[in-house]
Length: 251
Image (spheres, rainbow, N blue to C red):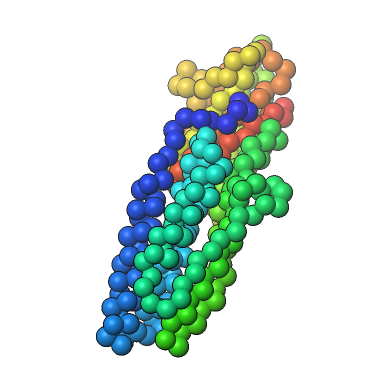
């Protein structure tokens, strides 16, 4: 279970639309204030917040797409569309929104996909932005960073019951930007001979959600191999996909 999942492609068009709506609303308020001469620091702050919020939506949506088999270039393409839209909409003074994708290992084109066999899985995106705005006494030079990271940590143990029957216990911890996160979907696989199988009711499979990013799964299975290998695949609430394999330890 090491091949990247190529199914479930996510259309980021909806993400782009959400970001554009957010920005368009704040831009209208900002420009209206410029026309009637009543622009204040709160309106400017809201406008900048909308740009940062839109950037966040674009990076998250692009990572969700890439993590499900989309090309790494998806992030670049979507950011280029976002920057082009923002700059076209601004009608007053000088405005520049620029971005740089992180290229330092383990990132490539701003994307990090690491789905290991040691119980650690990471899907991440890292982008540096620079926002420059100059207009009627207003000068803004604001660098900001979007570091979006979904991390999955998995530990597994098993106990021999009788013959090849084993009791397998799996603990998963999911986080977004190092904070506990909730999963939208979790699929657990275990390996028997050359087959990856999903435990079901016949395996007495149970999944406990502790509500804090920790999930506990337990099942019984007839596994003829000496080593019990499992693979956990997770989609978080942002639709970002991550997975990892691990060999369970015997207790």
